[in-house]
Length: 158
Image (cartoon, rainbow, N blue to C red; front, top):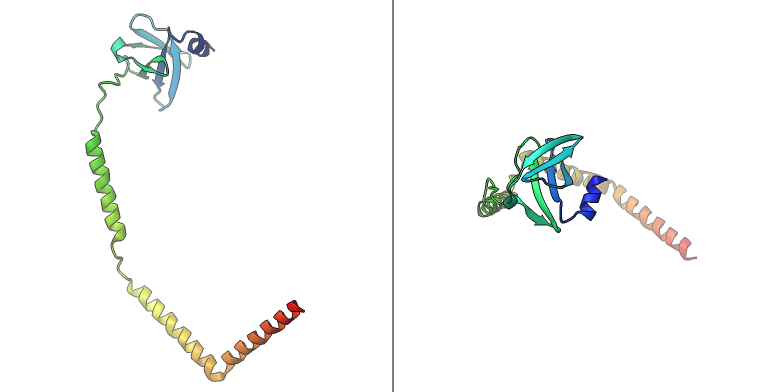
């Protein structure tokens, strides 16, 4: 409740604190600072942080700082250095994408087992066709199907 009161009625007097906990959660607190010191209560335990007014930035009209549980000072977002600069990151991502594109467009080797399986199935289908064709059974099956479809079409018309 105190957080809401500070946020709504004391907007110019409070500092918005983004509190990063050890279990990787971000909790927002609105606290009134004393001289270069912020006290944040997380789970009813007070955490004191020292801050420099140069480390404060403005976000949605609030003076804002980042703090990490277990550290004594505010995280300075302006001097934060990343492991890669943006150009190195984009070059690495483009190289990875190019490598994946080349891998996906390479012709895959045909497996000898797949070719043999397709050949055997094709030969089996041709053999079955010729067996039915020699006995005239295939012609009689096709004739029966034609007469059945003609009979059904006459029934539905009439």
